[in-house]
Image (cartoon, rainbow, N blue to C red; front, side, top):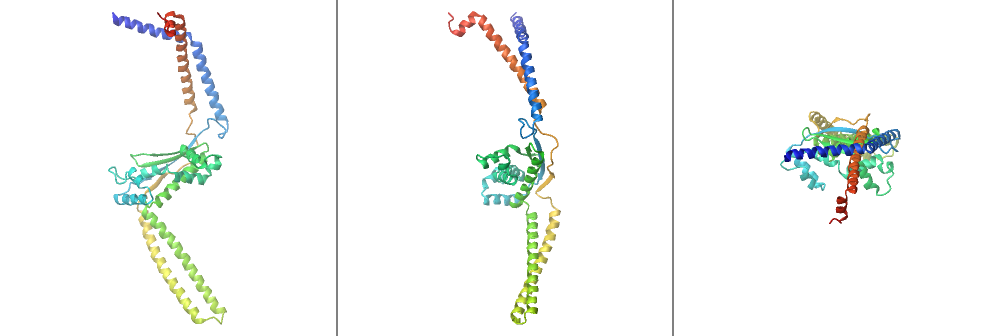
Amino acid sequence: MSAQSQEKNDEISLLDLFVVVFKYKKMIILTTVCAAVFILIYSVISLMLPPEKSFLPNIYKSTALMLIKTPSASSAGGLSSKLESSGLGDIASLMGFGGASGPSYSKLAAFLATTNSLLDAITEEFNIIEKYKIEKNPKTNARKIISRNLKAALDEKTGVFAISYEDIDPEFAKNVTSFCVKYYDNKFMELGLDPDKLEKENVEAAIATCLNDIKTIKLKIQQLEERTVYNYSANISEIATESEHLRMELETQKNIYSQLKIKFEILKIKVSGEHPVLQVIEYPEVPESKSKPSRGLLCIIVTFAAFLLSLFIAFVLNAVKNIKNDPEALAKLKGTEK
């Protein structure tokens, strides 16, 4: 008998709900329709305005994908010591160097995306302070703007590191992302994470210096010979001695150049046969379509929220009306019940 009574009460309660909704149907429909029309007009106007002036501009996202090789135990120890010598020893343990989970250059890449050095480099490269006309705390606020738009994500399963930048200007988003890729490449080189590539570049620079020295010595020898020809009063013995020294130095530089050239070719073969620590598998492009906002989804959410709000208001109004019509309930609220 009690179960039937409970079921009857439930049916009555459900019926009461429908009665309230039907009673305030005009208010519910009007509120929902007004909200839908408002958000629709809001979205259309935001789309028509220029991106710089729009209150809901299209945001474009440019992404670069990089595959970062996991280091061996020996190279990981080298990285850990480099980080410690750079004053970043605490970071090494946070990123897993020397831990049970093993080292990961990918974790280092994810960490670098949050560093002030990268944020400041972007600020300087693209004149962020002037671009956004930042006057108060320019350095700090520029970092906040970049941090808000710069996204970095690491896929633990594949080891693919993604870095992207969002902006109302698709070309600017692509340029910032491209700069980040170059920054990572240079930073990894600076930390010595790719020793063969670093050594190859150092040898290449040494070869260029050696060639310049050879050209300089040859020019000095030529000038010395011209002095001998046109200046008959010149000290022949001094010129001969100086010429001999220059020729010996020239021969030394040629030998150094030959050794460097051989070493460079060996390193070039070695580097070409190995995978670099950082490989760009997808370069950033100028995005053709926006990544956000989804105006259609926004319209649905606002309309549905307005509908729920109107339902809530309807039940509140109905409850207030019932209390006013119930002397006993009104007395309880006023605290005058006997």
